[in-house]
Amino acid sequence: MTSSVPPSSAHAPPPASATVPYRLTRLGTVMSPDPDDPFEAEGVLNPGSGRGPDGELYLLPRLVAAGNVSRIGLARVLVEDGVPVGVERQGVVLAPDRGWERGATHAGVEDPRLTWVAALGLHVMTYVAFGPLGPRTAVAVSEDLRTWRRLGPVTFEYDDALDTDLGLFHNKDTVVFPEPLVAPDGRESLAVLHRPMWHIGATVPGEGSPLPAGVTDGRQSVWISWVPLEAVRRDLRALARWGQHRFVAGPAFPFEELKIGAGPPPRRVPEGWLVLHHGVTGTIDDAFAQQQDVHYAAGALVLDADDPSRVVARTSEPLLVAETSAERVGMVPNVVFPTAIEEVEGVPYVFYGMADSRIGVARLDRV
Image 1 (tube, one colour):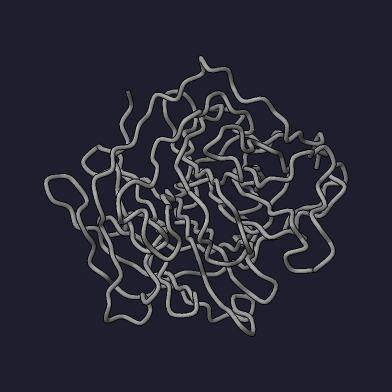
Image 2: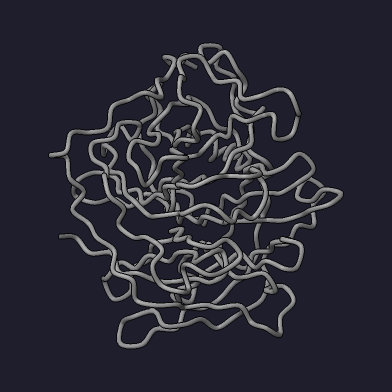
């Protein structure tokens, strides 16, 4: 495998003329916690999504029980006049019942992101396993959204040019592109966005935040890695082995001062690949706690159609900020957190977490 050039995290944002011609219009709440369900005692949030074999649209919400223990549920989306308005719950499809998904004092399978990969005929889910050493990205696959085959925690191919092992770091906000692209080494591959968390000191006191070679800004940022399609076709477990790591984008504007992370799976648009992302401001007290002094807003990146490691446009102002009471009051106040995009009757809708407590929907418009 070819070695990567050490990335730079000091990339200048695209010029102001490189606009993102999209906007989000909030439409309301589609899912709130069921007060009679202990699995939802601390909220429903941050769903994945997909179409089932029956053609119906489903959300896979994160269900949070007391003690911040998360499961992944299934809920059919109810539509009226072409607009998502609610859900019909259909149970739990993934629970933290593997040893690496739970620790002595905590547990969880969190924040699923789903991509239908037609080349494989599978839904590919990335999720966060909150296990003994903290959050780790994991992968599972399904044909029907109900039965999931775990492929295990993600591992990262070593790249000596980075002078570190990405497997040392916690990682979140991972999303798979829906179609194969050509990787830097020339092979047809699936691309994955992810967000390494450099602060090893959160789990090993005193270790601080060692950065890869070429990285000068330690704020959490979006990276890209690749999975050769041929390897996946030979053995699905290759979906959990990522290589050819590159920096994509870091915080550049005031609404994303602390960190950014990818949202829903990238959406192919005329301009390239549209990536909705969250940007964070405020103060983070504990990397793994439910924060109380942060603000999450939604922005957007446009990545080059052929080279998605290259940002061709990005929003300097957020597309959506926490304004309504449902977005401002909850387990983590002041949060809008987009995680899914689906079309209903040809119109794209974005599903997003609201204050880590509910799920909202917004219409995505091209302007």
